[in-house]
Every structure is written in structure tokens, then in C-alpha cells.
Image 1 (tube, rainbow, N blue to C red):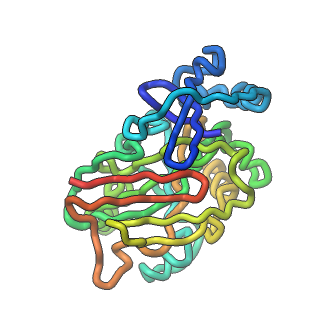
Image 2: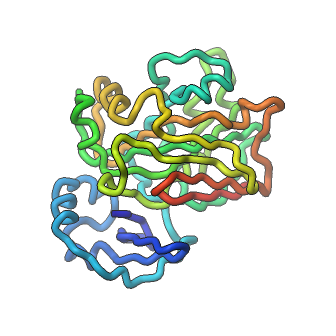
Image 3: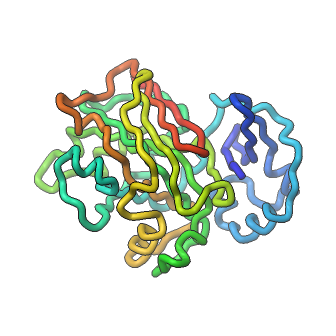
Length: 281
């Protein structure tokens, strides 16, 4: 099932090639399941039972992709994982270890096809699989971790490298949290549509040229391991997001460096999840 935020409502989405159709969840679910995706996640068990028992055959509304909104804009926590692909570790000449955790601030969330204002001349791309927490908790075991995931989205961890590496202690969270620097979507694809273990192709395309090309199965720390690690310290809440890391091919890892310029178009794709696209001003 694909769940989207569209014209300030929750829609169930169906893709057929380039055609996207939908049905309002308020209509499909009788109006008792929640008026936004965050409230839906707060009643995830109830929604999951309803979804298993429902048989929706018609998605009668044509969806204008340009009007899709960020599926979640009020998550309590956004975790991000650095150094989770060997190819990325190698290109920036670092060493592998435990997952490198930082945060992105909620004010950086943007719609899937947002226009983004550049913060400087050293802005980079990082395509990432984003896990959406459906059921929260502390000390979640790796064996039970995926039962806490509602689904997945595409995310771009857009990064101002100058701000990120400023100062002796670095500024990862600040450098990755300018307005529009966390576009997500285009919708949440629920777990029933995703194969386990995760092995999805993901790529970044800048102005028609492929810059990143990898598979989610190549992460050093899978989603279940990340949830176990994070929940051993912080309580996870419904709607929390986990940006699970980026593969090699970022601009900062190239010689010479390549960064996003005014007028560039950045497209991020993950197999089975769709794509998001940003233009830059």
C-alpha cells in the first residue's frame, strides 16, 4: 500500500506507468482512521488490521504529482546514519565502524518535488532509503525491529559541506538542515510491498547523469540493526524517520569535487518506491 499526503488529506495511491490515481482514506476507511499520516501512524495497529481486511478496487481520483506534499512534516525525531556503505566510506577515505548517527532537524523536511534554495556553493547530494517508524518503543530487539516499521520512502540528505565540516567538532546536523534539505516521499510504501531482506536499487541522477548507483543490501548496518541501536538509547515514536545512509558517488567524494549549482535538477530513485526530484535556485 502506498500512503500519500495530497491536498492536505491522506490518500491511498496506485501507480500505472506515469498515471497516478488515488482514493481519500477518509472515504475508504469511513473517516475513523485519522485525518493525517501522523495520526494514522499513532493508530498503526488498527490501520494495519483494516488494511489487511479491506479490498479497495477503485482509485478514482487522478493525482497531480506536483501537488504531492511531504508525507510527514511533524516527526518528533529524524535520525540519520553516516558511513553505512563501504563505497561511500572508501570515497571519503574514512574507516568503517559502528554506525555514525546524527540528526536532521524537522524544519528541513520538504515535498518530494520541491524547489530548494542553495545555502552556498558546496552543496552535495546523498540519496537514502528512509524507514518510517509505525510502532515506537525502547530497547527493541533486532529480531522484532521490522515489526516497528510502517514503511519506506526516498529521502535526499542534501548537505552543505562547508557548514558540515566547519569547526573542530564538525556540524553535521546544521550542515544538513537548511530549508528544503530533507525532501522525502513521494509517499510511504508499506512493508507488505517491500521484499525482506531489503535489496532495492537506488540511484541519484544530476542533470540526466547518474551519480550514485547501488543497492540497499550493501549497507553495513541494516534497518533492523539500526533500530536496535537507536532504541537502546532513545525512545522511538510513531512517525520518526531514519535516513539509513548513502552509497558512494557523492560530489564531495569526487576529484575534483562536484557540487549542486543554480538551475540543476536532482532526481533520486529507489526501486519499488518511485522517485523524487528537486530543482535548485
